[in-house]
Amino acid sequence: MAINVGEMRHEIKLLRRLTSQDSAGNNMNTWGVACALRAAVKDVGGREFYEAAAHQLQNTVTFTLRWHAGLTGDMRLVFQGAVYEIIEINHLGYRRDFMRIKARMIQGEEARYGEL
Image 1 (spheres, rainbow, N blue to C red):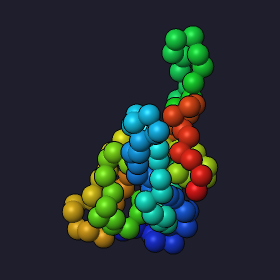
Image 2 (cartoon, rainbow, N blue to C red):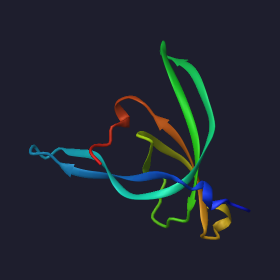
Image 3 (cartoon, helix red, strand yellow):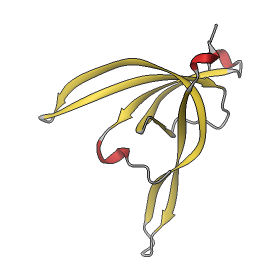
Image 4 (cartoon, one colour):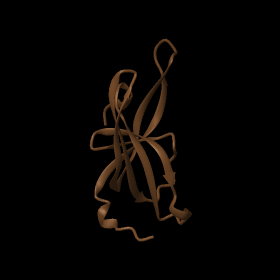
């Protein structure tokens, strides 16, 4: 599979869930930056739909990047200020050189990830 590394010019940040406790002992989840990487970005598609009488937009994007061993499906990523949840990780034959991530943009309150 030929991959043009020159297309990997976009910076993405991988976010990892961080759990802490507040003063009352309640668990609080936040998102922190695990690392920054370069990736090629390709728009898979956008779809508008109506759910519960609210107009929403769903964007799915494919990110191609060099192999990253620490990447897991429970992480999120940030691209151009938008937060994406990982739908699928394709290891491209487990050759450990490149991988593809299919991700969906998160909108609304869940998109907050804190200060970078």
